[in-house]
Length: 219
Image (cartoon, rainbow, N blue to C red; front, side, top):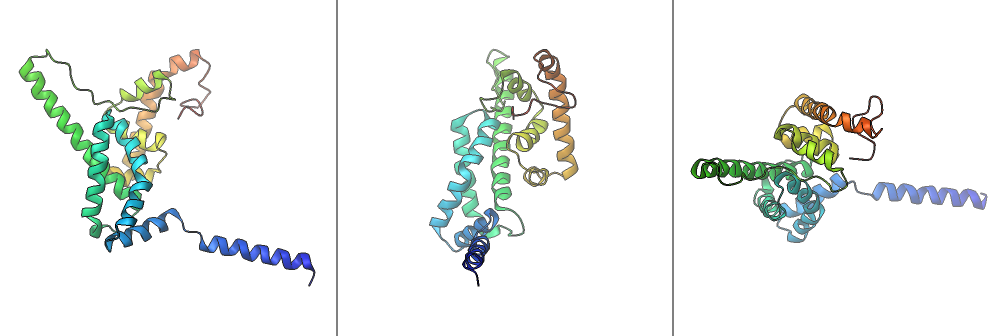
């Protein structure tokens, strides 16, 4: 057999071996979670390292407070560990973690609103209202950040998860515990509301092309 043929065969076998041995992100998650269910704290710390920053980014935008987001992230992983045996391997670990974190975030927002209600009632409007606006990446122009922050909470959350965090519609539906059609409706509604708010300014800057909601690269 020609030498170059042997080399090609060996190279292809090497590539195939690498392909066969490479774990997907989901497989890594499942392997780590099975270890965690058996009490492996090293595996648990690996899961925390894989998801803490991404979860922190979402919760910081939701709560508009780094300190409160850190508390919620910590509580999220405490619950992940406490409820580790209830994890269903038919679902994605990332979706499960996001669901726990966002539910805790919503609880914090409800607590704020309740506090704000009593605060306004008792102080007769003399005290400033607590902010519940989500922070968005600093790279977004101020006009876009302001427009997103003005969206109603249910539209804002769906939009941030889908168009900023770039989660799939299916993942967003699982995280928010709503039907897929509801997610698509909320995201589309959010985009339409943003278009109505931003179109005049974007047209002035020649940044809005025909049929495009937002300039490419802004999100």
